[in-house]
Amino acid sequence: MFYGKSNLWYIFFELAKQGLIRENKILKRYSFSSIFTEAFRDNLGWEKAWAKHQPKKEYQIIIVGGGGHGLATAYYLAKNYNITDIAVIEKGWIGGGNTGRNTTIIRSNYLQESSIGIYEKSRFLYETLSQELNYNIMFSPRGVLMLCQTEHELRAMKRTSHANKINGVDTKMVTPDEVKEIVPIINIDGPRFPVLGALWQPRGGTARHDAVAWGYARKCSDYGIDIIEQCEVIGVKKKREKIVGVETTKGHIKAKKVCFVAAGHSSILADLAGFRLPIESVALQALVSEPIKPIIDCVVMANTVHGYLSQSDKGELVIGGGADGYNNYSQRGSFLHIEETVRALVETFPVISRLRQLRQWGGIVDMTGDRSPIISKTPVDGLFINCGWGTGGFKAIPGSGWATAEMIHNENPGKLASPFSIDRFLEGRLIDESAAAAVAH
Image (cartoon, rainbow, N blue to C red; front, side, top):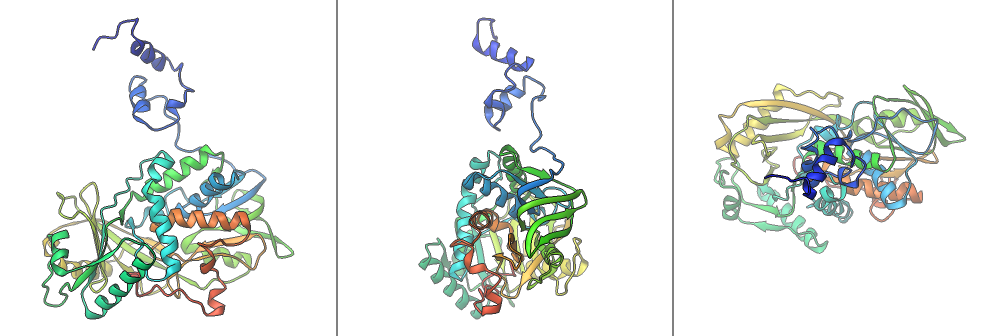
């Protein structure tokens, strides 16, 4: 197409190439218009997704942990309560912890009412999170299928289905034939593990894990929140059992409020603050296969054979299993788990038996005794904690951040967070999700 000098498009492109509309709002958002414009400027106008900061001497709030939960907490403090004097301190890099080391499953089909509340809030927020953050998190509500391969599992899933219905969560029980229709590659007549039915959540699915962290980080930076990477907390400063700041590898930072959101390292931070947490840290392993053509368009979780399976947009089969049986802080995979997980899944999905493994990894998960999280005040005044998500943290990121931000602002847990107080372990009001978590996930 020819653009004459009187043509507005010609003028627009010339201005774009010269950088004269650099400050226009059109380039502050990721959109078709901004991509179109940058194509005529050799893509020189893109800003970094988030700013790199050195710590100031004092903040109103410090979030320790720059994973999905920490960033979401900071974001909802800014969005919901207009608090932006916040530092998010990350010992490594954004997206380098559990947020980038999981199998990206999103679901809310839990058993207990309090669990359903926070996970369904999270799933609901995921639905429009790409638009809200102006960052494509690649949310795919492809459906989650939880197999029943024993009579005990079938009874348990029916009970969960009833609990979901009471709480307004869209799930239903499906028959073996319906399972086969949803997942044609599955073997429903296995000699050891026949499929007796399944719990189907059609609005469950997956999202791009690191994009969730990057999207929240970008939006936090837009609000003026300081994101400080490569900064480890090595001490906690208290005055008469009230938090006054933290000691880091980049110096002392004062704060009126501090929140620990550090997953598997939460117990280490709690020890620095002078109290203990009822959690233990273990590695959870996962792997992906070589990329192949599409063969499965939903998430399948199989507790009896101890594995779960989905296919990424690149064609890789994302495969995960249970957590290690011993405490550790490893982020590496092991041959034992490859054999245990893949051997079991091959019986249910024989078609994958000849696939080659592409890579494997581990993430450090923080497990409580009842397999439910802790969102709570602590014995130290002004110090809050968000931990204990175990193997199900990714699916809860938006809801967790929403609830934690509310708790920090009001200095007391709200309706979503109050059941997950640390005091429940002393008072005996456990939220037992060990049976409903499906492969502890």
